[in-house]
Image 1 (cartoon, one colour):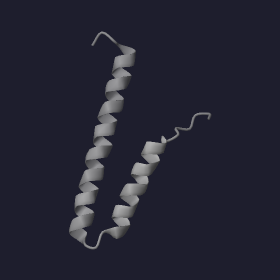
Image 2: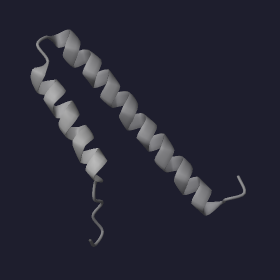
Image 3: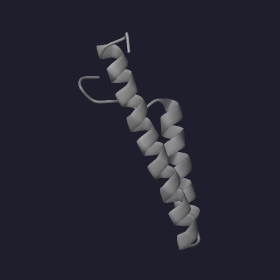
Length: 61
């Protein structure tokens, strides 16, 4: 595995689901809504990752 981060099967399916939604979007409003969903998901993941790291570094918090 090395230093690379591997996606779970669920994550791969989620990427495929969003990819298909992007391909199927017929207008700019649909793409805008999808972009907002992806932005929220990305920032939620970043926040969760930060929280886990802090918990590992100082579990008493």
